[in-house]
Amino acid sequence: MKNKNVGFLIIGISIIIGIIILIFNHGMTSIVNQSCSHGSECTMYGTIKSQTYLSFAIAGMIFAIGLFFILSKENEKIIYKKIKEKTKKIDIEKMDDDEKPVINLLQQENGAMFQSSLMEKLEIGKVKATRLLDKLEAKQLIERKRRGMNNIVVLKDN
Image (cartoon, rainbow, N blue to C red; front, side, top):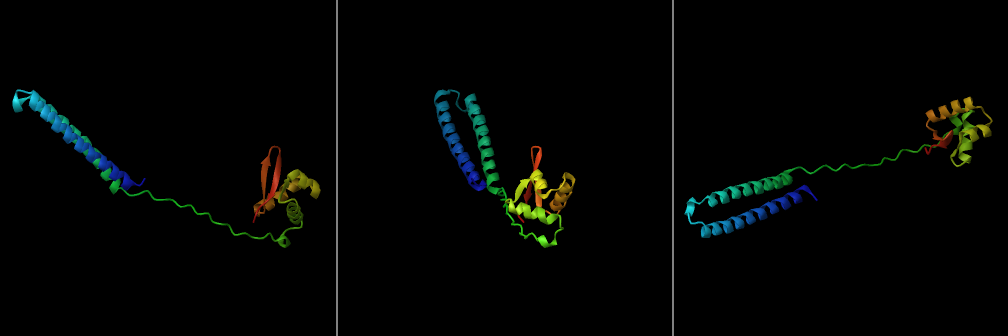
């Protein structure tokens, strides 16, 4: 619900409360008039007045809260917009001779394979594979994801 609608609702409630206070005040005054023999000096009149003022003060505060909601500024809506990244095609011709077989092998394996399988198929050692994958990761062509004691090498969608 919007702030203005809530404000109008609260003001409506405070007006209804004010009407109820007036009806109650009129009823209590007529009861005191019939039961009190002291006239206008009766202490019950003072009690009715203090209760009426207190009730109107509470209704006034509720009315002020309603005005606050009506006059307050609506919260701004935050709009999130997804921006598509420009896709670039991997240019294999500009790569080192060591990098080309890694990309080709990943493309053949649907873009992902275990690092250990990659090392076996390329017949390279752990150190060379790590350095080679570090270079490709720095160029943002691949990504390594940890899976237990192994890494999965994933070809990024560029």
